[in-house]
Length: 125
Image (tube, rainbow, N blue to C red; front, side, top):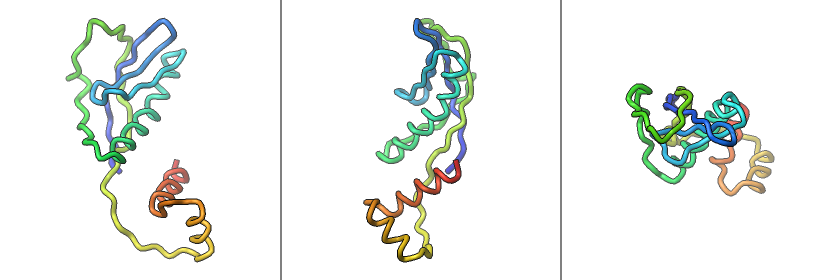
C-alpha cells in the first residue's frame, strides 16, 4: 500500500457538515460538527479506495489542494488533506501456518488470502 493525500472540501449544510473529495466522486463523510465530519473522512476515503481497487476501477492520482477549483454552489468552510492508503498490486507469498488453524480459516473464509490480508489490516490498525 502507498500512502496518498487527497484534497477534501468541508461544507456546511442544514444538518451539520459534509466532506467530499473532488477527485473521487461519491466519496463522502458527514457529521454534526466540522471535526466529526473531518474525522470520518479518512475512513470514508480508505473504504472508497479499497472498493475501487476490488472492482478494478482506476484510482485517480490526487490533485494538489490548490488546484481544486472553487464552486460557488458549495458552502465551503474548509479544505483539508486526508490520508489514505492506495492498495498496491497483489504479491504472491508463501507462509507456514499450523494445519489446525488453516482448517479453522477454511471453515469460515471463502478466500484464504483475503481472510489473512483482512486480519493483518485489522491487527495493524
